[in-house]
Length: 442
Image 1 (cartoon, one colour):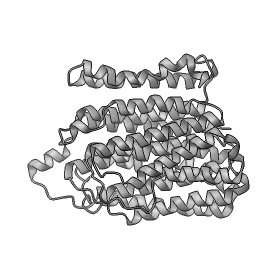
Image 2 (image 1 turned 180 degrees about the horizontal axis):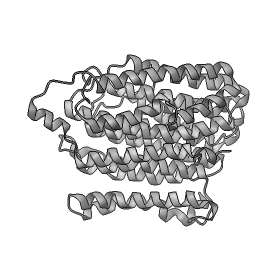
Image 3 (image 1 turned 120 degrees about the vertical axis):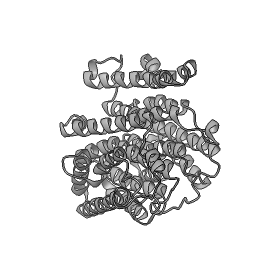
Image 4 (image 1 turned 135 degrees about the vertical axis):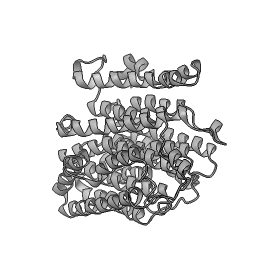
């Protein structure tokens, strides 16, 4: 990371949030002290993107890395807006502190802004190990929330990535390519596993959405940046494996009973297609993969925050139990609809534009796999539509007048978080439509 040495102080800027927060009393000033360092850091990254090579930093930084860093900060801001307003709970004192997301942002900047195959892979491995440590912290706050097999998968993925970073020449060999794909698949949610013992607390679900649904697409793209030319020689084998993984995720989302299983299945489906597009080695596949790595985490976070709010209000963690639960809460319905549009691949939204480029890139390498992607897109459209109808139509739970008023009331932190997440998601759509994101990759 020698090229980053003059900018290291700026990269550590988000760590001011957990340092400033204890200095202010509870209330709005504490919230502002928490989010201002992160917001200022994101503004600097955005200015660097707009200025290009003659920007704020001394050394030229990769534009894809800047985009990924910006996306990670956009994911963290809604979480930071909600964390200070979490309700009292038996385990509240043991919940992950604000320093955990802020540390993730500083580490993510170091990992994403590196250049060269070894540095990119090493940065990705470091972030996976941080994800592993985050799982240990969450599991300590909610014992039994994560199985040992899940933690082992994260550890193996980081170890394989670190091994390839030490010997990047292995990436041009068939064993190295297979190991690389194994590291990616280990990072994804398991498409057929059942985690029904999961303790679904609203605070836990919010952090879980960030760490294990929103961050993995960014990490997957970070690892794939080390092989921008893809694996054209064995693409039908490796790309087919990632697409099968994604289709299994759709099957899991269709048959799941619990909210977390549905979310994991949809996340696995999106990352399977993203990986296949990047492995194709085509410019279309790379452009679509980059944009989906930016868009999918934002959509997953916004949808996950809505689901965590419904879980909080009704204390139900099954999809059947949440049927009709959002009919009385218009802001939640609007936010979830915006997030779902990306997964439904409707024309004129970013999800459609990104997946269209992804499809063209995969089709150019293998029409058979391209047909599989097309079938998966149609299936995911009807699947997400069914979830929308289940949660936000029909008769909701029968509540007393007082309970109904409580359910409809959103906290100020929730409104700010939903508004921030929706704003950035719409901004990403606008940037993609105008070509400002897809143009980053020729």
